[in-house]
Amino acid sequence: MTLSLRDATPADLPLVLHFIRALADYERLSHEVRADEATLGKFLFGEPRRAEALIARWKDEPVGFAVWYYSFSTFVGRPSLYIEDVFVKPEARGRGIGKAIFRNLAARALAQGCGRMEWSVLDWNAPSIAFYRSLGAKPRDGWTLQQLTGEALNALAARQG
Image 1 (cartoon, helix red, strand yellow):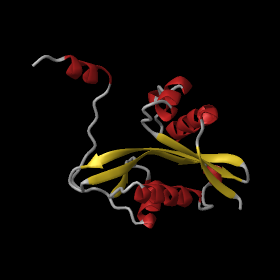
Image 2 (cartoon, rainbow, N blue to C red):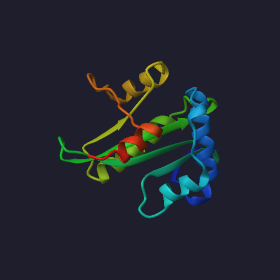
Image 3 (spheres, helix red, strand yellow):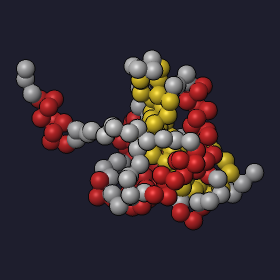
């Protein structure tokens, strides 16, 4: 077997951070990366655990990763597995590694009683969108992702009344 997937361990924190930065480079978002090993360690391996990660290896060389967490759908009445990141090194693509990662996450979602898996993709990323369609994924038409960060998040939390 040339492909293996395994849960990340605290010893993998440098590798997880490396893949986060590689994904950010690919998405042209390197300027947004604020993560560091200490923060990742706290949330991936501390209590309470806020997210999980796996490492993909091809011929015993790390070639990709995924980070996900569980949310809850009130409409479905069940948890959802939200995929924050999936990344496979460009030179390792086309070997079924991404498909294996998604298959692994789908099995985890079902084992946890999830009613769905969700993730976001940049609208310009046609290769990824085509890959997701090949898996059977569909966009959530009519919905847009909203986000509060930085000063806006702090200001809202500090507001009285």
